[in-house]
Image (cartoon, rainbow, N blue to C red):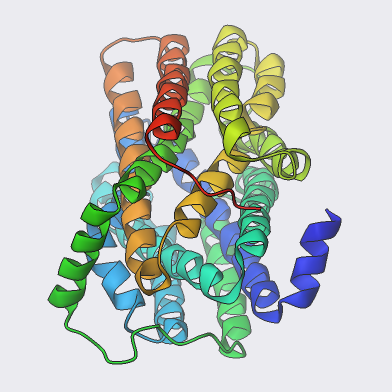
Length: 401
């Protein structure tokens, strides 16, 4: 924990970005619990729940080929301000949705809102390697993952309580107000300009990035490796678990909030203990851990309290895997291409998460048990471990530290 505090003290830009990030993520989880609670109250089928989960991630897939080029050309602060305002504008109308006939509006708002959130995230992750050296970048990515997990923990837990006590509309309102606070903090921040001194055409920059990726095939494999973390896309699965297993034990909103927040406890403490231990060789061992922890979760899923404990274990390795594989990619990318490569990486990661979410819905609609679906997700990390072993044999990976 000391190294995180020291870096935040030394880097004022990182410190301000981290505070904004904390507020924005906290706001996002307020809406998440409210949305899934609303869907369950409407008595929608598992396919609708899975589609909603996928819509949280699909916008990032579709916009990535263009967003990276924009990031490498345009002043980041201007875009970030616009994106946060879009998040406010698309959050407030969610308060008006209460019937199945209005699902189309919910889908549109979630799609646009998460597109803005994804774009903002890509900008921030392309900024970090421009202001930090490789060792500090690894720590900054760990800070980012801890903030995400901390926000996830308390955002889900508090949102579950708020939704239970006063309803989904108040959660959406609080979400929008938190983004207003984040905008005021962003106003006073000075950010580095894009690397492109003489702006090129968008099409030229896209062609240039494709040529760069083709000549650096390790970049492709690191992007695909990071995509395996998408097998932890449990949002739709958790909502279905609460409805199927725990409806007689706990209220829907509280159940969703507690399951997500218990997993997030593992997400928070994982990097604190594993961050210093991580290197390229040990990454292979860490990829195996989620496979067995998810299998354990499947075994105890029908008991709510055992499931809470298993959720903590499932979260332990996730954020470290996410931050380390992200740092590996940043570390092997030339500065002029940060925005575009990070955008392509987010595109593949979000595509992975979207497909996993849709797969969960398809399997559930086909009659596959939730336990078996969870086993399928765990097996994905076995494939990821074998794939990383192949990458190590084929390429030379530079150590981050």
